Image (cartoon, rainbow, N blue to C red):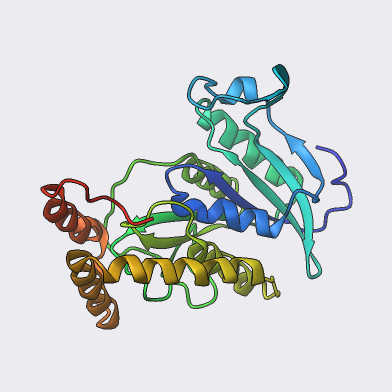
Length: 281
């Protein structure tokens, strides 16, 4: 790493482009925390971490001449939020060497005397777009979560792991407080979901007790809400389904643990027999 000698008790925020980045919410939030102007202080060897057939580099062809290649990139950017030193780790989820990467990151965090490690993510869930985005938390020990975010879901939940969770566990085992904020987005929506990105940014802001502007994203969220309301209104079954989710939220009856996906499965079964029906854009 370079230009890190003057870091003081930095906080690390991690968001990876993976299956726990529904609606691109966590990676969008990370970009808002440290844009492209934030200096890169460390990068990782893409040839070691990525399967280029799965994540192909992007080729730019100018007037028939292959000109530039943009490779998958996992890197740390350095920024300051308020009076705090922040390191943002973001990029595509690696295909290979998860355990080795996790061990290296845990070792690096110890060397830099990282104060806390915050992971961001977003998952599809049985929630409606007409209500505030729920945020669940994970924590390596009680008392780490802030801003009235509760650890969850309650009970046992078995899911395929993401690399970000492998890293969390390694960091926690190294003695560094590790926690995560995970937005729940309506599973019936495809494409980027700005409301969830805003919810994650606000969760980080409350956690760090700082102000983080989200004006551009808020305008995007308002436009998306209008489109979703219109699309829902013209389809009776989707409208009925959204109303059922609203009732669950209003009565604090959101499913927990393995029940979290029951409403999704029912919705997909009901819709599966109708050709032409898919996710709302």
